[in-house]
Length: 397
Image 1 (cartoon, rainbow, N blue to C red):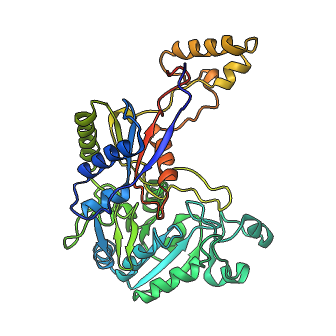
Image 2 (cartoon, one colour):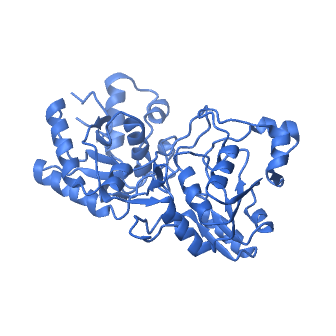
Image 3 (cartoon, rainbow, N blue to C red):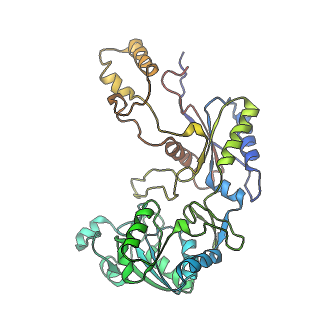
């Protein structure tokens, strides 16, 4: 009889990770203990994933507000700087902003509107329509924004991020000026020294600013790319992917973790004889339909993964086969016909109508989203996720 259970995703508990911990040993042992405790067997092509947070914690990859300030001052001059397109987040950006403001005398903060890059809204599209504001061309001062929209608070957090960020800048010793716009070049009327804080559009923003006459342009991915006074760093992503650790310290995105996933894969092979895939994951890549937030505030979903997780799904759409090719069949005949079609898959199905409607995304993005939803971001205490059956199909016995 065919196996009746498909993909299973389990959150696995682990000790609280501290700097210097042997994460390869901890993750390996946690998986083995979970298997013994829950009575499941480890199989080939199972997946072990761990949050980027525990990897960065084990690495001790932290930077302080003062470290950030020193790096910003060295790269952008320490006078007036434009800080453009940050996301609206106490966890993701507030502490970074403290450091940025501490490294300047004046900060011209330009917020995108009606929402930030990942969907946190300052105002609604309906409000823009009602007030006759064109977000593609209109640049608003703080005074004009307040006149038009008042004091809007975030749907879920209840925070007025405009007021919050203005206060953070002032408390950090810089003079705040706040404007609202979506053309990065608008900041050049205020300063030629710009720190662009967008995540997924950062390369285009830098290109446009430089072409328009900016003198110094850096992205968040270029701040904290090397150690400052012994701090942590990330050579590839800088401050992108960082999270609040304390009121004056951020935990950076983990670095150099390819060796870690390969070591865990090796240890599990030695312990179980099975070839298990391993990855590090951060934010998933999905959108909340109510709050309109696109989850991906990290620069990538997975900064490191074993070779078997490269690529995209190559699947047939069972509904398509049942409704088209085999519409005349039912019962066991239909089941066997579909199994035979799956077994005949050969090469890429891109462009094949029988694959229409399957998810056209990278495996690591899909699996990372599953992991993010499984582990959560609160007090579940399961920073490791163990997935079985992900690569199975309808023919699996």
